[in-house]
Length: 283
Ligand code: NAD
Image (tube, rainbow, N blue to C red):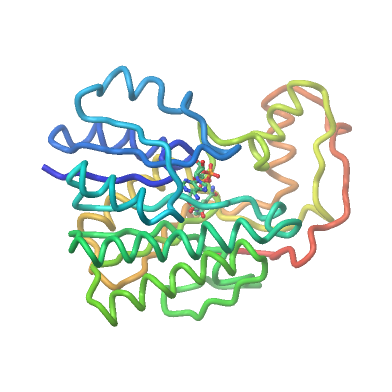
């Protein structure tokens, strides 16, 4: 029996991961610990609460508050943490980096301290390919240095460095995953795919940054969950693993595809000024 604490489990990828794990491992128990910021939504877990009542619990809380985190770990007999909790929207990080530094870095530190104190079996830090920065051609490998270009990416890189340091210094069994741009159900509609789909349905403009030629490697959310599951169970502690979709698309292509699928005209595309520090390509 494993007792997993899934922090940020009411968000997009976290809620998909909770459902995935409970279906796949009938002897696992999952406790979701989530602050329920604007991005967290208990509706994302409504079916889970009904289908897995005996093996699932939800506790509202902030990963930056050590007392609350420790209490959950002790009272729920947690042996593993998978940390999805983060401020995750690049545009918000450019306007107000404060919450990103707090949750993404300090919050991860609190979880690492807790993993250390209670000798947890695993602490998996869900990170992002954005920590590498932009690459014109070829592909990043796990050994490439972090070169983050947004406050979001920098805060995620900081969290990763802490996770690695806790492994090297204290022997905390940390694992890191670096997933690429993820799409699928339960995503908050500020991110490009759900925003563009809902805008298209409403006949509202689709705001496309710059020339729309930025390239992202798109990963379906359940493939991302399968990658995290693989790293959690088979990964070597202290290591980081890229999780890629091998599915590169330009933003313009994604935009036009959405319009075609929703049956709306290309005239809904509105070119807007590029995002400052916008990475050209992740791979
Ligand atoms: P999301 O914004 O949808 O969800 C984040 C969740 O964390 C929300 O439920 C929110 O309420 C919770 N949260 C925020 N601050 C918290 C705090 N202080 N304490 C407890 N809970 C808190 O994010 P997402 O897109 O599901 O991303 C999940 C993780 O995966 C993030 O760490 C992100 O960096 C990473 N990631 C995302 C993508 C992507 O394309 N979405 C790609 C690679 C990696």
